[in-house]
Image 1 (cartoon, one colour):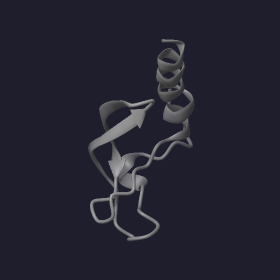
Image 2 (cartoon, one colour):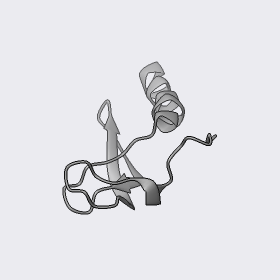
Image 3 (cartoon, one colour):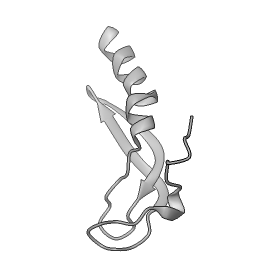
Image 4 (cartoon, helix red, strand yellow):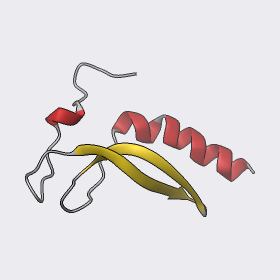
Length: 69
């Protein structure tokens, strides 16, 4: 679910490096489990952008499912 205020990847710029973020594979981990995901990241310093929607949506659901195991 995106809202009109959500930035697209082409709108995102790394605050440290001042370069546009690019979609790329990153490893997200929680409770010892590692998940490869495509997220916007800085090609220079590796900063990864996690949107509020993703953090409070799918990631929260995965965290809760892992904690329930």
